[in-house]
Each structure stands twice: as structure tokens, then as C-alpha cells.
Length: 135
Image (cartoon, rainbow, N blue to C red; front, side, top):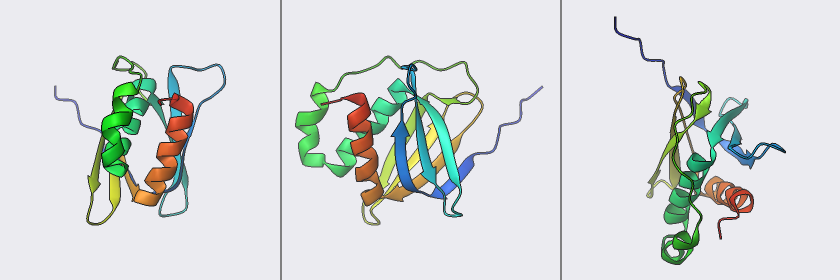
């Protein structure tokens, strides 16, 4: 019997992006945003997925500095979460001409995607920088 693939949740163009760390929980973070329809959304991501997001945003937003910044960053082992709602893997790409960044989240039973402006990307990068203490 073939399992039916779940549809991808598309949050569309996102604003007000942030990363939150709940006190006492060190293995996951929460990425939040506001969709085009003015609805708040949140996704739980692993520490490794957050580091991937920070790494890719660094290369997209700060390509000249990335060569010096990213080698100093701490790394976490990539582990797939057994929890159905936790995102373990993030694919982060950019459309440079349009100055738009896209995230595609995978893990558990939920697959999702969103995209946002470079300006939002700078805010998200700064929030990740603070939480991950990457530099």
C-alpha cells in the first residue's frame, strides 16, 4: 500500500519573521512569521536546522563576509526528529534579482515553505545570530 504524501503548507510571502527559544528547551527553536493573509504562523525547528538557516542566510546576505564568519560558527549534528511537527531540514535559496529568499522545511510529517524579502532576511539573520551565538 502506497502512503499518500501530505500537501506542502505554503505560507506565501512572510513578514515579521523572528526566532524564539523557549526557556529550558535547548534542542529546538521556533520560527514565526506573518503570512500574506495577515495570519501568524509558527514552525518548530531543530538546532541544526537553525544553524543551516543562519549559514545560508550569511552566504546570501553577506557573501563577502561569509568566508570569514562561517568557519567560526559552531555546528550541530543533523538529526531527524521523530516528532511529526518538528522541522529537521531546511533548504534555503534566493532569487537575487528579485531580492527574495525562499525556505522549504522538511521533517516529521509536515512539509512547508515561505519566502521573504532580503530586508526580512537581515532581521531573521540577526535574531538567529543572537540565539545561536554563532560568531
